[in-house]
Image (cartoon, rainbow, N blue to C red; front, side, top):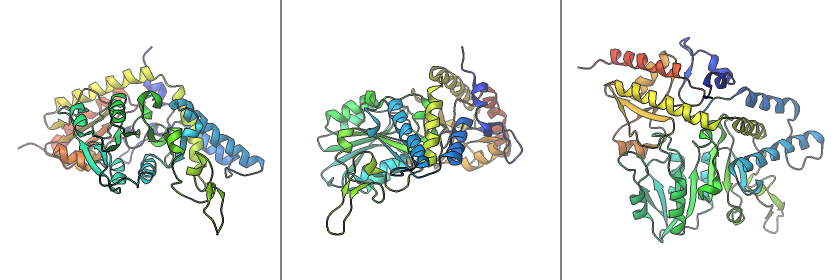
Length: 404
């Protein structure tokens, strides 16, 4: 049976709304933030109504109930990612914090060491590494926009200490071959880190099968709430890490006359009061993921993506950027006469929400020779009917910005 997008989308209350122009909302900005199903919204509200207390060390029922939700979510995430256990899952505010946490653990790197990044990386996977003393090497993309194994191989050396890459590019939608990259990184003796910000909304991902040492991601790009994410790390590596933030919850002993001692993993990395309601929402999101027909979602997404590419390709004013061989439902394009912000504004007037700009990936847009792009990103709740609204909206842009 084919995936039923109409039934799926009915679980998302906001998708029945209208935008500021009183047009039915067509939401194509899913690479930035996906919408929330009712079950996630309800779980967060229920937590606030019935279990709103702090976690860790509360010797009363309400706190123990909150703690149970918090730790059961950690176990659920560990199972979904095929981690070895919940001790390998650290809750945080999302992908950006996870990458900053990892960079902070490698301040001992010297100018003789090297870190390999990829030209398509989000700023969150560039800036933290630039704070270190290690030299940075950048892997270019193939002409198609796909992973360039030859260039990666040339950049690897005995000096390479860290290789970090986005699983799915947030501008071009490139799906990188994680296992292959991980094998090459490990053969050079490097740590392999995956930016999984775009990963979870595309189906299950087995962190052990990818061979990654660390994986960071955010819930809000996979039908969960904002402000919550997690880091997976191999236990033996996490054991050697020091706390990133310090404060309540992380120490075993604190004294004015001797250094503090800290609790075990993962608790030592979660100082202060965490985003407990966000964790409750993440727990509901994991249950939601478990019920999705991911094979059906993939087929549905491929059909939508093909039709988007056809519509864009039929418009002579549009240039699609790097339509490579392996793409998630993320498509970037430019208009030959209109600025990306103007394109996004006109599409908004037709009810279509897209993202415009450099998408926190300025090195990539520079490499592409553009100042910015219009990014259209799909989710399982998007429909064929919504896609068809794109063609007349693009024609409206052509009328406002006519050719000479």
